[in-house]
Length: 98
Image (tube, rainbow, N blue to C red; front, side):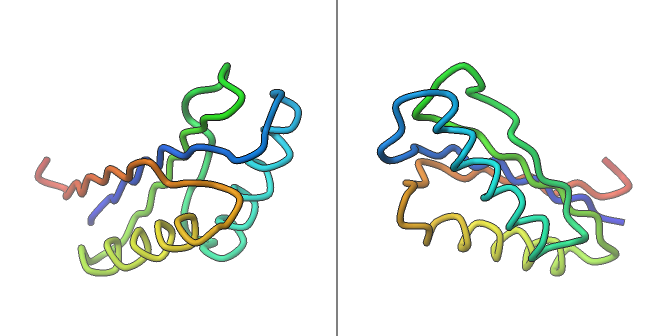
């Protein structure tokens, strides 16, 4: 069993309040959940900043390759959104011996 974790640090475009931030982040999280139903997705950081967000993605799979494939697809989907800028993407892969 493998668990893949991806942390995406993003900079939001023309956002001036936490309410506007929610209107960008919620649909992004919902789209990730819809396109990758086996993944767990949540906003995990920078909750009090209106132009920054941290999105966490977790995947459980029988193979490391599948975990990596899903995390790569999630990262690409976020990176190609025109209204946000992906600042960094950190990933970890855990197996049952860790």
